[in-house]
Image (tube, rainbow, N blue to C red; front, top):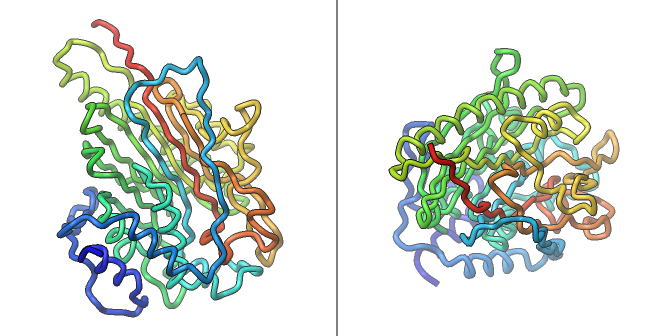
Length: 386
């Protein structure tokens, strides 16, 4: 094994209290800039995956999930390679151990020294081009070093008042993280947003990353967010969604204007394609869902395409048992610009039998939320003369 892979595996094996140095990395001082690793040599993802599997050999295997094709003859796909996007609330370690009360999940199933391997195994298995995560409270000591070694560039934004800080011990605040592969994309702009409701700042955040494909020059805007949790907060979630949509409109219009200004061909570019990933903490019946569906940004929810009518969300994206009872809900989404993007494949949802009677999290799955994953293609370009 190469030196870089060995060093990173050693980082993974460190206990949370360890003061041993991490793999060499550079963190930009500007919070609106990405963070990235300066690595001596790229890690081998197959080797790291095998090491995750070895560390988890005493645990049952993760549920097998198939990639399901959604393509239809009426879709006009570009010949360019698709973009694989992962959305996942990975469950903050401090919340899982100290606040969430998963009454049917054994405490040792939540041990970070093994649970982190399950999270990384899921990412390494699917190798997404873009990774959007919520409830990240081990960004600097785990996800940035490991994913940075694999060629990802990352950005992290903590909640201003993270509930993780109410738990002792903790690893700092949780927040949203967004990673993309440096070989595939170059960054155009990064926006870190604190979401507002009726002009007042809230505790929820979003990262918006504008990217340019190095090979084709195609641009893509990707956002990750995590809206307010719990029942009784539906109006706040709706206001947060409205604020995010408004700011996404501003950001994509800004980027589209820059594209037109730099277009030497004299053609007028279409609106910038947009992908929005998040744990919305909202069922499809909530107002915030309807806001996204009817937005002028012309967004649609990717996972509706798994249903027979292509209009119905999955029955659940999270399934847990707390002291208050069992909860099965659809709260997580990948929204996309349906005029300029097409969904080619989706990672299916595991069955109730696969999830098991004790629900999530468990020995075989590290979070109470399921990861969502899709392959998205650009539709064929259409130009209008000025």
